[in-house]
Amino acid sequence: MSSKTTSSGIFFLAFTALIVAIHLPFVRLPFFWDELGQFVPAALDIFRLGAWIPKSTLPNVHPPGVMAYLAFTWKLFGYSIPATRAAMLLIASSGLLVSFLLAIRLSRGVAGAPAFAAVAFLIATPVFYTQAMMAQLDMPAMTLTALALLLFLEERHAACAMACTALVLVKETGISTPIVFAVWLGLRDRRWRETLYFVAPAIALGLWLAALHHATGHWLGNAEFARYNVSDSLQPGHIVMTLLRRVYFLFVSNGLFLGSLALFIGERLLRGREWSIAFLVAGAQMLVVTLLGGASLDRYVLPVMPIVYAAMAAAGSVYPASWRWATQAAMIGALVLGFFWNPPYPFPFENNLAMTDFVALQQEAATYLEVYAPGKRIGSAWPFTDALERPEFGYVNRPFPVERFEDFRVENLAGLDSRRIDALVVFSEVWSGGLMNYEFVRNYVTRYWGYHPQATSEQIRAAGFALAMRWTRGGQWIEVYVGQPVLAASRPTGRRSCLACQKAGQ
Image (spheres, rainbow, N blue to C red):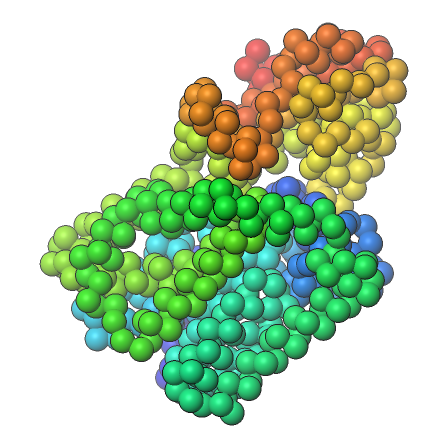
């Protein structure tokens, strides 16, 4: 066994121990948002039914790679939330190792220890932390993108093509990476035989799309998904706003402007064939996730982060040692602060620990309903409706019958009938932040991100419902309303009542 393999194994164990240790508080965290809406149900369909095209959730273009990996994990260890979290943390640890090795490769000859700084940036990044434990596609896509790039730079083209094939079977947008490699080998190096290796990822993705079309009649799984993530996202205004959002998130937010300053000053350290290929991979991926994807979630740029952070760390070597360590420490500190600080503008809760506040609030409401309204019909919006219907997601012990609303706009709640549902659960769907007080901000998020104001408590009460309980946490909230006297309109008595009222701030 070579010393390189031995040292890589040691670093992998160290990274795994660190990643598991810092995620221990959340290994039992119930599933959040898209986890319970798409990826876990699709994985359960493979696990229980052998169905590669989802049946218990709406099928879409996302390939089944991650879902098959989870199903295999559950075959070995049984289905559970901790097993799922552990499986994803293993991928994150692998991603950290590959990102470290990639940074070493890219920054050869650069002073300091830029690879360690690049890894520290990743660990300190809130969206890396949350995605590391979540059953979603972007952390596996990051791991495989970094692995494919590293293999390509090492001239291991067959292995690289295999990594790219796995990548596109994890996330379809990963197809940009083998395209970059094929174009470079063909047009730049004139190595046509190696170029043919990268036909394999395109064939694999094409076979998946053909199977999806055969099963659903839609190349992207369903018409609504295609409209939202392709037709709507290709509007010029949406593209411009998404690009600005991508640039801000990667180069300005959470202290990353310090790394961007280093890039500007030390750009001469980032030249040559290998950096050029890396930047082409990052740029191609940025282009794809800017043009496609209606929600424009920040997690989509996770595959770009190992390259960007390696560049920031390497470029920082242009500074004197004391200034380099000071600026990198300041950037890491600002990133860590982002775990707990919510910006004054709307952002996805999954970008930091706000996701745990969201889950905790939904747990509070679900537990309350299990105690005071077992088996009653509950009206709410996704994802809370899915949380109530499927106990395997970690919120309830027995399923509830639900009445679904698209969201909590007044017009969607206009037909509320307190005789048809026993309780209504309303929660903060969007982080309001201070900037939402300005009309131009509200107009912007309404036009480009589908935001709509939620019905007020007064409007809900006007529909014949009374507020029974309210919880708040980290600036988010959730409320339970009752209509017919199924629940006592007054607060419950006893020790639980006091604890619930304290958590509601009442």
